[in-house]
Amino acid sequence: MPIYEYRCQDCGHVFSKLWRTLSAAQEAAPPPCPQCGSENTTRIVSNVAVLDGMGGLTPSEQAAVNRQAEKEASILPKSKIEEFRAAKKKGK
Ligand SMILES: [Zn+2]
Image (tube, rainbow, N blue to C red):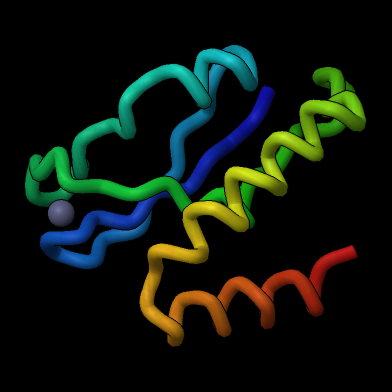
């Protein structure tokens, strides 16, 4: 099951949500911030994780996630993009 991380645009709180399926995560609206209740939250796609033994992403699903990450990165401030890049370097 995919776990997506979200960042609240209002208070900066970062939280994660476990979804039943990848498609559910992609189709649903971002969940509201658990800290301040704001619905102004953004998914941090580069931090998506799939639990071992629960079925991984197919290559086409992974490609879709990557494309979405690039798309969202393009509308983020430069500092955020660099954060994504640093995370990618650390990852596999
Ligand atoms: Zn918040």
